[in-house]
Amino acid sequence: MILSQRKISLLLGTVTLCVLFPVLFVSVRYARLAACLLLLAAAAAAAVLIKKKSTYSINSRQVLLLTLASASLFQMLCYIAGLHFGYYANPDASSLSAILLYALPSAGIIVSSEVLRKVLLGQEQRVLAALSYAICLLGELFLCGGLSLLSDRFQFMEIVAQTFLPALLSNLVYHYMTKRYGMYPNVVFRLVLSVLPYFIPFTPAIPEVVNALILILLPVVFWLFIHALFEKKQKTATKKTSRWVYAGGGALLALALAVTLLVSGQFHFGVLVIATESMQGTVEVGDLVLYEEYDGNAVIKRDDIVIFSKNGETLIVHRVTDVENINGQVRYYTKGDANPDEDLGYITAEEITGVVLQRIPYLGSATLWFRGLFK
Image (cartoon, rainbow, N blue to C red; front, side, top):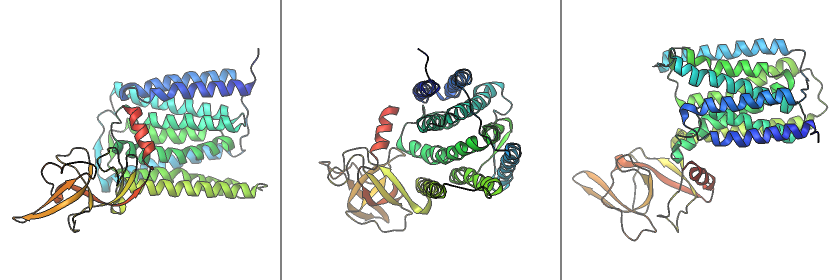
């Protein structure tokens, strides 16, 4: 029985995705290498077994050169920004082991995932386009080392804000670029951004939230630039569809920016997922709470629900049951609404992270499910 091109593509994409996902939880030291080998094997199989289609623009060469120039300029600006933010030493820049374990596997992941994107998108099937999108998203997670060290909800939210959300938007742009101009602009763009820094002996100390915002905005701005430069005069018979694409992309961009700012603690607000039953009846397991960061100036009263940490341990969400001022030190006594007894001892202002403003039911359940996977 001879399988059709669509069935071969569907089988290859599904097997690649299913095999690749567990590798996310392999040791960080070997996650990139394992993912690289798997993706290279899948890309080789796709190149041999699946008939490729080409629908590239006559401007492909110009776009490739512009992509190289834009990515190089962006990297140069980042390193110039280090004059303001400072620099970190990069001891692995001249290390052969780091190049073999990190730089080369990262390059392999980028090239092989773009080959798969090109081949699967070329079949012009929505299911295959979705499969290639999911595979490339996983590839982005491998570029940051996978998920093996992910142990708590805060690291999970950081991964979401700093890697996953930028990857969501970036891969929409990469899909568009592949269908319109081929895979080479994407390969060049991603290699310059992700692999080149491994060979430079210092790294700009740009704040993580700023870096995340840049990674979200950069591919979108680049796409708008290319679109305005080469596609503006193109006649569009599907104007209504384009409006929906723009609206969806704009909504996703706004969501990504909002979540990135919220998770990073900007605007003095944050979110926290409830993982225990100590406040059951008031706040349930899986609820998301919105809190305002506590700066020590606001007055915390009895019955306020606060977020605190004793001795740098896991954050706790409990209610204030009493407030005392002893020799100039304000002491807060707390208790979980579902607990029979008050918490042992007291907390001070220095131990309080924030004051809960609002409970959002069930919104954190997915995070708890992912945490269960990590364990």
